[in-house]
Length: 454
Image 1 (tube, rainbow, N blue to C red):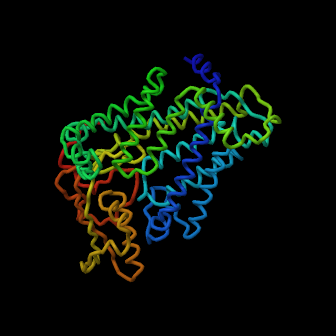
Image 2: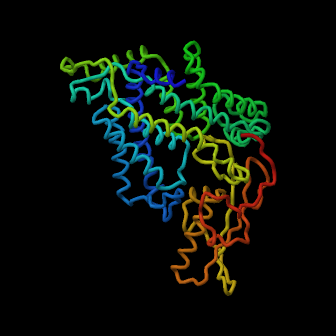
């Protein structure tokens, strides 16, 4: 086994697939940042809110007022430099840090594909995506034809984890036998041309979509790996992601996954893409001064492989941390994020906070609109860690306003995947006395149903 791993790590392959991936990644990320800016989301999500929800342990990461625009500008410029392969290592580090900081500023905006981009950009720090067809080649007067095979395979592995784990997460009774939450979402798309009125309200179509989604997620990494099924698999990738983009507001994610799937193709396709790009963009640049070297070699290979090994070990294990919690995962969401559980729940909640004087028992209710945007209030209303953090914010706020012996209670009702709304949080618990931690939250009331599955 050791010999096989050693032999595998010594294999090299043409750099073209990684080069095309770098260019596509940089362009897509630049477009995403520009789109975010153009739509005014920097203002509405990071500048306007009075309060931002933090990830546990990252409370120090906050929006920086109007300088948040500068942060987005740095991220966008870094993406352009990545695409060009100009000062690549610095550019991809800058992109990873700025993009990840943006995502950590407020967990209200958490999406699986933002997490995926952070992971992918971190991985790209350690692989030579600028080995060939980059501006760095012209500066160094050197380009590498071949790179270690594992560098391209590492991106394939990360993509495979995203798909396969998303498929495993769908193996639950709500998705399989109740077609939830698609049964709630799809009928709302009745206005889609041609198929809206015909299909979207059909019970059999909801189940077909649910089961097709599982089969797609579980099989697509393997179909892309196998040469004979690769073209068919890529067609499926395009159809699946275009269709989901039509049905749901999931931004750039479908296009990112379509472009990323190209890395599974052999180098010949990518060489043709590079030749086309050369003709279009840089045919006037004299490349005769750039010498071509056969193989790229890492300077710090062992420490690098150790980092990559730890990275993937973490990615394989971390999504299963929910097994350490006693509560129903979909209900309590302890261990839910960062586990590739994509669009598995429809949760609605109403959470009313009561501020009580602990000595006199005088109380008043909070109007959440005074502190949160509609989007923040919606996300807070059914997620326990949001509710706890907001309760502490309210406690601190009203204490600073001169209120004495402040206690904070919440009356929260949540409906999950079409079930009747149930009391979610123990309303007799003073949330100011509860601290955020990785321990199970005893103040979440038990789920009164059973969802079986992974």
